[in-house]
Image 1 (cartoon, one colour):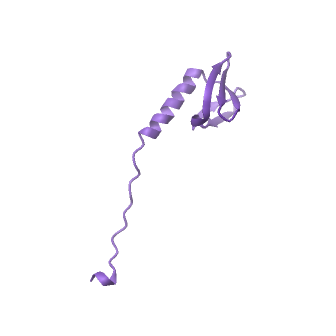
Image 2 (spheres, one colour):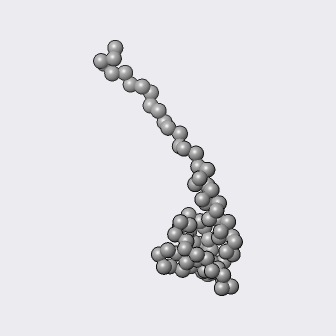
Image 3 (cartoon, helix red, strand yellow):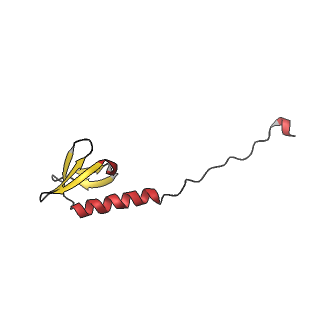
Length: 78
């Protein structure tokens, strides 16, 4: 998800995986695979930068640490 700002200055959080294309008309218009379109204050270059940063953060995310419980000794193991 990326944070953008609509033309009316309302914050917008957008699913970057659903962006189909970006138009500059001169406003930045983001077309989604769902058919929705959003006009945003950010430039096309800024939107692209945010998408790349988002995807890099996913690729660089480390595996979560596995929390291991202390071993439990069963009565049969004595």
